[in-house]
Length: 246
Image 1 (spheres, rainbow, N blue to C red):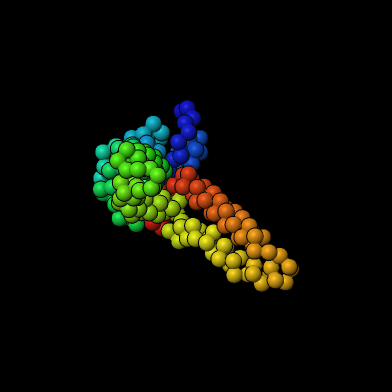
Image 2 (cartoon, helix red, strand yellow):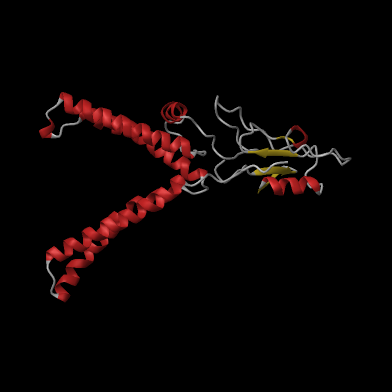
């Protein structure tokens, strides 16, 4: 059997075990831990199947009755992969499926999980739509007065689905939506310094320009740090198998 890059799982009773590389799962087949009637799953498979129905094809051995596999998830939408057992990684979506999911099926859904493709395709759609609406505003209204009603309406309409898909993306990495409060960290840091700096200015003989500079640098530095942390979360692969959110 040739090596492949997929991660494999097998069902131990009703609990998924893994991930295992191809060589590791083959070793489990060889020592009998994975039998012909053991349910297995790997990336790209629609659902759990018996090992004998896969390329692993272990030799059938007499054994005690095998417990049923983990409960099957709801039937996936066209083009989407089923989740593992009672939950699992969010399905990878195309650009069209991601936009339809965020704007129609899960416009204000803050539960469950969202894949990287769902999040980043919708982010791309947001950027494209914003560029188009800004162009429309520029063509219809005087750019000198910065009047952008079309793009403003778009921003209001996409605020909820943008927030909900971000929450689902955090859930896919087994993180709480409370991590979004990192976005408030720059304002908290700037407010704290703004309250403390006047006293320090009097004590150390500084001036108001120094105060404004320190507060501004603290705000920008904290904002960059919060942005980078959330960016890392958004690009991370979802947890394999079920987690706290699905």
